[in-house]
Image 1: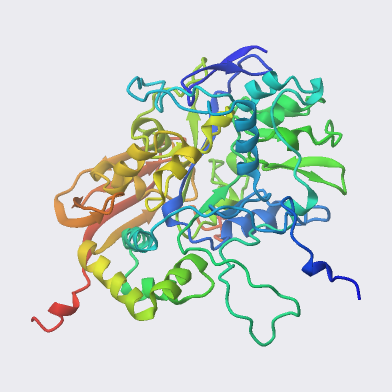
Image 2: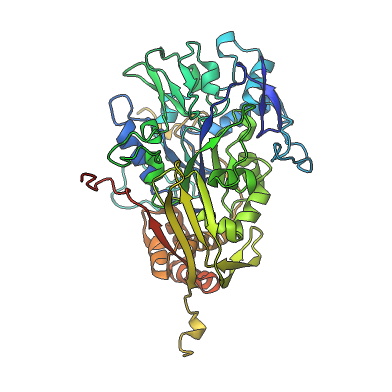
Length: 429
Length: 104
């Protein structure tokens, strides 16, 4: 196999095709800390793209509960187990002390899904990426047994034969997932028909329905299981990043033809999502754009991290990890950058806090931000990951967001916070 | 009478059986962090308590079930007394409304 450079792993890796990169790349940041699983994103996507026959169990956008759930069930733990079987005890990261600009999380010393497939010497057609084909049952019940299994006593009206489920400890977090439109997609690598391609203008990964013959190699090879088979058409389908919106072709919303966010992003009531198109250099690394909000969050401040970077596909979806979750679990999921990311996010400085205000401030895709500084308005106490408290300074700063033409489209100003008077001070005036 | 299928022992690969393992975590830290996050989004005490009261939101409601309504409210108020409720003013430039008339 040819070798390509994967900056998330800090090294070169095997991939079935030579390097070729788009001019810009569709990417996004999800802030896990704020998601309460209202599933508005899931329904926005489903009611737009997957409401037809044969798509009943197809959720291009899903929100699952970790550590208990997954759609399809157990997708990540199964693949992690398979990788561990191929390379036992060696799926580890190297030292982070060697961090360089293009080596932000250290170096991954284990095997990616492509390298594990080489080691295993699988059947030629399916040997390009290690994976598995989920059963119909695993697709059929998203969110089953997740946070609802509280083990309540049997009540009148329960169905006959209902069982007492194990009770979860009440801590968990929600993981929002769409296709990561990976730089080195597993689905694309595995398609024997070469029906899957990455658009040169925005890096969106699409399946050419006229070429697809439904072999499901993409379903097997996608480590995130975001390529899905549709039995009525006998082809596979996947998230298309709402490309008509990305192209600014939805005249009802943007008559001026500017890119706007996908349905799932723009429907997010928790304001956890931000989407962008980042500039890519010829060598596949991100061009330096310190004023781009995604570049700032992902490359500059490193508060948003890729999901399972060790799979090796260089996913373009990034997550601000949840603050309350045990570190080893998060490190397995987001790599070794977790500690720094949570430290920075828990007590954000004035610039980071300002940029965070731009999440879902507008439906327009932002290409640049600016912070106008104002006076200090307050000091507040925030909880750090280890449970200790730290003082955060708040400033009357204004975050400005600009669209592709450089026009200001959003302006958010932080103001003096309001306070809830403590019980002991209720009658102190 | 033959054995009812529901009484048969579960098989390890049965996709309808929960198989994920538990991971140690701290619900109190989770509650504190969630309240801080939503206070940064401008949620005041009443809106936050409503979020915990609503059974549709299983994470926050689960915490309320764990700590009880009174203690949950007290914890929410304690966090807000410490970190306040962040306020922002936002201005979004048109055209933004999908239902707006764009004619002359």
